[in-house]
Image 1 (cartoon, rainbow, N blue to C red):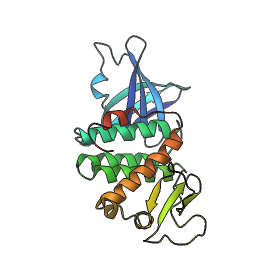
Image 2 (image 1 turned 90 degrees about the vertical axis):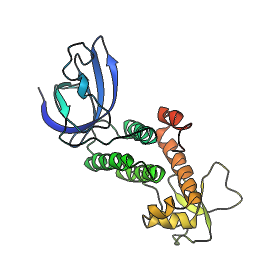
Image 3 (image 1 turned 180 degrees about the vertical axis):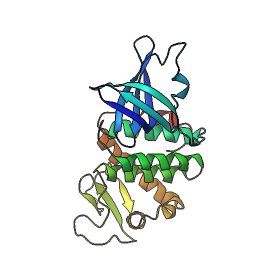
Length: 243
């Protein structure tokens, strides 16, 4: 029987299983995303229920083979959890959904774990939420092999120009806009693309037009990778913050 001890992890989602148990989706540093069964976690005498906290660094141990090993122990790590309120909390719920839908189970991505960990503590600050989410999305796609083609104009290889407007085509990249391109294709300015190319996220955050362009681009790209999956967090987000 396989046994894994003292693995640092975050709980992404939990759901009821049978009468008193729960199935946990967790993101671990060394084993990627996986599902674990917490036996009796919903029972009156459960010893683990109080530690099944979202957005909280955890230390878990599990054992068993197959698709659903079971939790041996779970406790909070010796690290202060980020304090997330309202907009920050909804933002964290959104990135949890992205990880659940985009990261394949059992694929080890230590860089994804670290990226998620850092993002939670940035969200705690409560400001610059939109650019924090956009940066998370862009780098997550890169880590998963779905990176945007933003190095240069896709058709010519030329550098982006400040005065130009570009259209972004999936699996191709940004090309100079023309009247023949449909309204569904996202448009993004050369200035915003140059900032992205140079990782100048702060400059984008300081420009409301660039921030909107980037939001529309990332929603277009992520919707493609999600396929028919719908993000529940977006529905909750809408009345509260433009995320």
